[in-house]
Structure formats: structure tokens, C-alpha cells
Image (cartoon, rainbow, N blue to C red; front, side, top):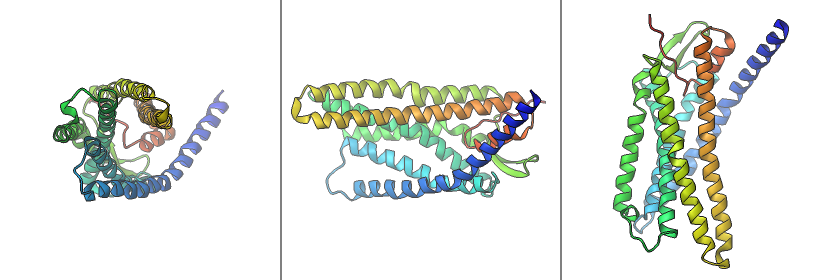
Length: 282
């Protein structure tokens, strides 16, 4: 039994090391492609002569949120390549991870607004709504940025750079003053980032596809594209949340395990960008 546990432990440790070796080039590639792609989208919106539509406003803000996030990825690519040694100081530790957290909330909410706008345009074309006015769309975007920043304040307040003696690094991680913050964060991310947007996007998508079908066989190719786009949005939304839940599970495992074993430590630091580390009370 002990031999099998040792083999399993060794294999898991090797797997985490292997995964850590792949993350820096992957993050670098995503960062480069994201900067180029989102910059082009923003340039198109900024340089077009006609006034922006409601969809343009939402998509422009979505591109801006993603651009901010991909600009933060190189910091973590370098950090992971250095064994999770954070060399960018306390301020950037807070700012970079606050921006990443804001992207999580803002991107999902902007996707939700895009779905609502398409629903109103295609399924309810004869019912005028303030939501289809560019002025109101801009106000909604400002509100989402404010909400995203507000929900990301814990990262700004509790992110810090501290020494991890058994790994010999200065790591940037979340250090909540009380375990209740962990529950609050998990509930907020699940509610705002998944449970609220998913039914709204699903409802809008269903009625969009239904409205396109009712318009006849001429636009059947558009119906197929609409279905594929809807499946893509729902897959991305589900995938992002599932990944976040997996990371939070491993974070809770390390907290409950309570021992400074190498597997738990590697897991904790590998997921340092999102895992919460509450301080123990004396």
C-alpha cells in the first residue's frame, strides 16, 4: 500500500512539473495572438467612419477586456518559468491579478450583453428597447467595468508577495485574513460568472435560432452558423467555469491537507493566480 502511494505521489509530481514546463510557452503564444487579434478588433472599431452600433460597443469592450488580460499573461509566463518566483514587486502582483480577475467577470457579462442585443434585434425587432440604444449600451459597459472592478477588489487588497521557504521562492498569492473570504469568493465567481449568464445566454440563443428558422429556408446557412456560434459561446462559458472550479478544488485540498508536502505545494503554486490561501489564526 505504501509502495503504491509512493508511486502515485511520484507520478503526480512528475505530471505537475511537466505541466509547468508547458505553461510558459503556451501563455506566451496566447498573449501574442491575443494582443494582435484584439488590437486589430479595436482598431477596426476606432477607425470606422460610421457611428458604432450597440453590438459594436459591446464587442469593442469585450476586446478591450481581453486585451488587458493577455497583456498580463507574460508576467505569469515568466513567473512559472522561474519556478513561481515573482520578481515584479508587490504593486504589479496586485495590479496584474486584479486585471485578470476583472477580465473573468467583464468578459462573461459582455458576452451576455451581446446575446441579449442579438435576441432583441432578431427575436423582438418590433419592440423598441433602451438597451438597443448606443448611449445606453455605453452606460451598461461602464456599469460592467465598475462591477468587475468591485468584485476584483479582494485580489487588490489581499494579493501579496511572500516567501515560501520550502520552495525557496517569493510567490505572489492570495492571503485572505479569514476562511470565510474563500466561500464568498467562490459563491461570487460561480453566481456572477456562471449561474446568472448561462441561462440568459441559453434563453437568448434558443430564441435567436428559432427566429432565424421562422424566416424561411433562404437563411438556413445563417441558422447553422448561429447554432455553431451559440455552441461555441456556451462551451467557452462552461469551460472557463469548470477550469476555475477545478483550480478552487485543488486549492481547498491543499488548505485541508495542512501539510507542506511537495505535491500540495506544487499544486498550490501552480494555481497561484486563482487559488486562495487563508491565513491561519493564532
